[in-house]
Image (tube, rainbow, N blue to C red; front, side, top):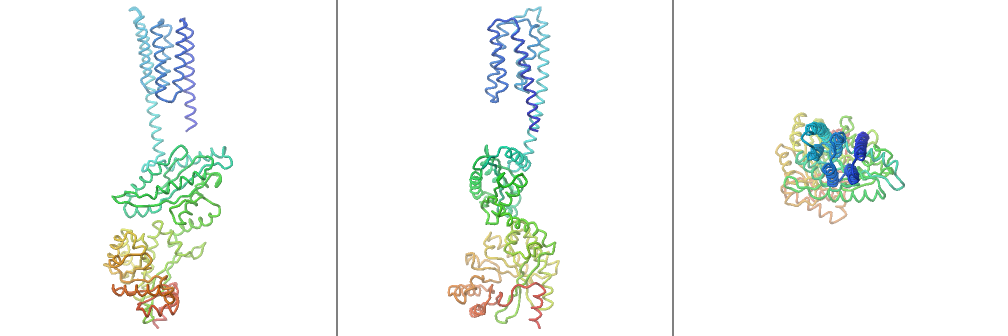
Length: 593
């Protein structure tokens, strides 16, 4: 497209210069006084200069000067119209090429005719009118054709620009990004010197999906527009911004020295802008951004590899805690590739029968019998083996994968408890619920559908959520818990004491069970402060009418402390580690027998 444009411009310039040369030579050859010839020379120079000037005011100024010169010559040194007829047909065409699609040529044609009117007798008027009409008709036809050609050209340029523009943010889109990226690679590979290159910066918004899902797509679009405006403020001669996906953006920094420093400086500025509050639905919300940087040709020798490595760097930034930037490094590839493979494979893990539930017994301290169990998710990956829940749950919570996994856990727990109930008097099974699930407006209804399908009464299922989860959008989460409570689910608060929730909030939570976090239990038998914290939590639960469960009990002295303080129940390796379904069933049978 650029090649054709250059060829087209070159042809028009050649036509203009040829026509200008022919008209100028013809005028110089006329039998005119020296001053007229000097004016013809100035006409040729000003006309030629106005064609090549790009600044509109300067172009118009020189065109007016050239027009005044040719108009003045007609008044001062009139010639026979027959002698100059062909020349004066060419002059309006010159202005047509200078100002395509305008009325300049027609105005010039009329003006040239009027310049000769005063020197023409009545007998010659007919010839003047005939020749004048010829000039005007030819000029008008050329103007009309040029006008429509320019209109078509402008429309094509507009369509082209629209095809390169993201409709929502107004930034350049993925198509433009790819075209410019390939152009930069081709350009830089021929001119890049040691220490020079261009940089690709990939930006992914942290927390956008949560806002988009909780507040709706219209609010999500408003957020993207605001992000787009902030990123656009960084664009300039050497920096170009693009929206390449849903909440993914990119910058390309043109080739220069110290490109790494420029990329770092721009990334730091973007992070500062990204973390400033966004006004949405009359409230202020905060998100962050994770940024990956790759440099050509230092990190890759082609466009595709450069994009992949910028993505790898971005995923590294996410894995390190989000809200930061990371340069691509060869040594991080293996770790980041693992992250991306786990992210992709986790979406299909349930379909491929790679997920399973392990059950850790909850034991009554007084009787020593199992009355419940916590369902703990496990993933056996075909390449990486057993993947820690701390690793894959974090990945799942990045998008809707956690919702699909949550549904699978609920379905499997409902199936399993039927088997457990058949061989024991176990009360219920506890399943963990993430913040992302609680934020799903259809969470309660979906859970009811699953239970109805599996013919599982709600009181057979206990919903566990951590204190930190409930502290996010506290009031909204309380409303969800109330709905669950109304439908008959048991509710427990996990990791109590780790997130600084206030006692007033605790009193508002419609929970049944308070779980004492393992970090307080670990040293309750040897550290007096931890002992006092455990005592306080137990007494608080008793005063609120809540049952207490201690987590992570591993020694008999720990159990004795809990028992002496009145803790109702516990779970931990002292009794049993989490067990696969078949082994847990064996444990239940032994207890029943």
